[in-house]
Length: 214
Ligand code: DX5
Ligand code: ZN
Image 1 (cartoon, rainbow, N blue to C red):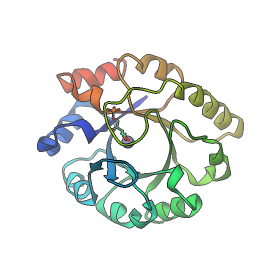
Image 2: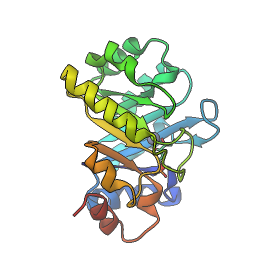
Image 3: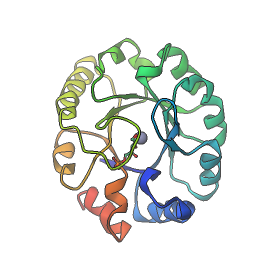
Image 4: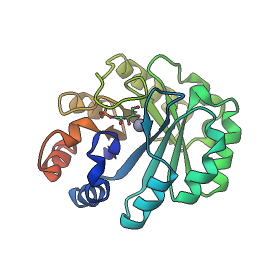
């Protein structure tokens, strides 16, 4: 299982240093939540942050667009150096078109599905999706409680993907902690996005190792 470090809850006064430390600690991806105060009642990161971090790390940068009208900002984040661009399925009016646009920039395309939303539409455009991110909290904030009902959805997604022979990795985002990581690993999740639980203990290298089950 891979670890994607969500920067939302880190001390952004030391953002660059933190990313360097995360790379040394062995995380697999850096997860940047993009929020504009419309889709969610919060603000976070921008193309400039992605561009600046691109200079100082070799880690793949994943950009999670928690914004309305994501189609307007694909170019900006692709040009800033994102490797994977994840859009919220609930705001995609034309999912195939937006996934296609992301691919035209040579980037991987992901779809995020909220806790109360069905993932089943994905079967209609699975060939355009490189990554499915199941939200285990409502989008908008770090440090929220893990919605346990998502574990049922994980089983359904895994079954569908197996039946249809889709090779699409599945991630979980929100409320992931050392208490629930065992169950998540057993469920066959490929990637966990971890924010608060990563930055609430020291040293980072030990916390990352604990999440990886080392
Ligand atoms: C929520 C974000 C998550 C968040 C995860 O809107 O998409 O990526 O940063 O943070 P924790 O691990 O604190 O729930
Ligand atoms: Zn996220």
